[in-house]
Length: 391
Image (tube, rainbow, N blue to C red; front, side, top):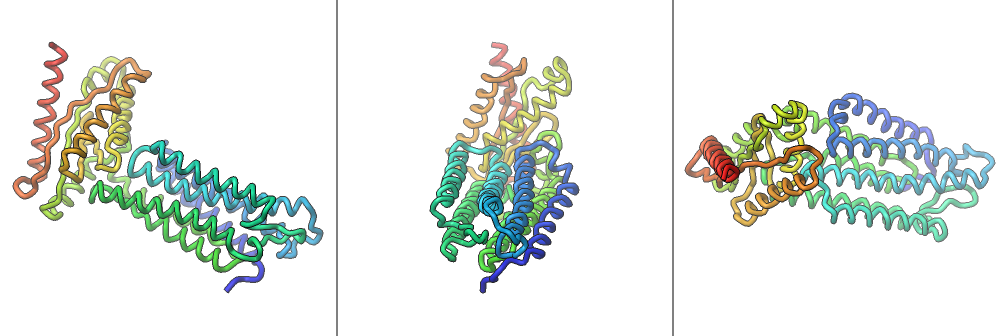
C-alpha cells in the first residue's frame, strides 16, 4: 500500500528525531569520537552526512507541490526540489559507503587500493546516473507542478539506488564473514546493530511512499554502533588503540573453552631500542613510537588475527590458523611494513622488532604454556639480533 501524499509534519518529526538522536549519542560518546582514529573519523563523517540528509529531507518536502504549502510554484522551488532530492540520494549512498569503510578499518586496520577504487566507481556511477536523470528522468522527476515523482510513477529509480545500497551492505557482510573465518573467535563487531535499522528504514520508505524513515534508521544504526564501541572500551589500550591485556585474558578463556581442535598461532613481539628512544628523545617520542608500531602491526596482520599491546613495548598477535603459508605471509607483512616506514620516516630513529612465535597445541599444553614459549623465543630472537649488530 502506497501513501498518496506526504505528511509534512510527520516528516519534520522523523528528521528532528534523527538529528537529536545523533546529537545525543555524539555528546554521550564524545570521548570515543575525539580519539582521532580512522574509525572515529569515519563515524564523524557518517554522522555529518546523516545530519545533512535530515536537514534536506524536510526542505524538499516543504517545496514539493503535493503538500500544498507553496501556493505559487515557480522554477526556484522546482530547482530546490530536484537538486535536494538528488543530493539526498547521494548522501544516503555515502552513508552506506562510510559504514562499509568503518567496518574495514575496524577489522582490517587499513583501506586497500582495490576498495578505494570500488567505492569511487560506485559513487562515480551513481553521480553520473543522477546527472543523466536531470535530462532523461528515470530515477525521479519534478514536474512543472513542482511535485516529486518516482520516474513514470513507478519505482525503478528508487529500486535502482536501493539495489546499489544493498550491494554495498552485502559486500560489507561478506567482508565481515571473511574476516570472521580468517580471524575466528578473535574479533567481533555486532554488524546487525547497523544493518537492521538501516534495512528497516529503507524498506519502509520504499513501500510507503511519502514517509521518511531512512534517516531515522541511519541515526539509530550509528547509536547502536557507538554503544557497542563504548562497551568494548575496557578491552582497548588508550595509547595505541590496540586490544589490551584484559582482552588477552578474555581470549585465553575463549581459547581454553573452545574446541581443542581449534588451531591458533601466537606471536610475541618486542620493540627494539625502545629504552634508547625514551632516554634520547623523551617519553612523548617513545609514546609516538609505540603508537606507530601498533599501526604498522595492525595493517600487517589485517583480518588474519588480533594485535594486542601486552605490556610496555611488548605486543602479542593471535592468529586463528596454523597454516605455514599464512604465518609466513603475516611475518613477511610485518617486516615489510617496518621497512617501508623506516625508508620514509621523518623521525631520527628506526623502528624494528624481535619476534617469537609458536603454534598452539591446546591438546597437550595450556594457553599459559604457549605464552611462556613465545616469550622465550622472542628473547632468543632479540639476542640473535644484538649479536648480529655487534658483529
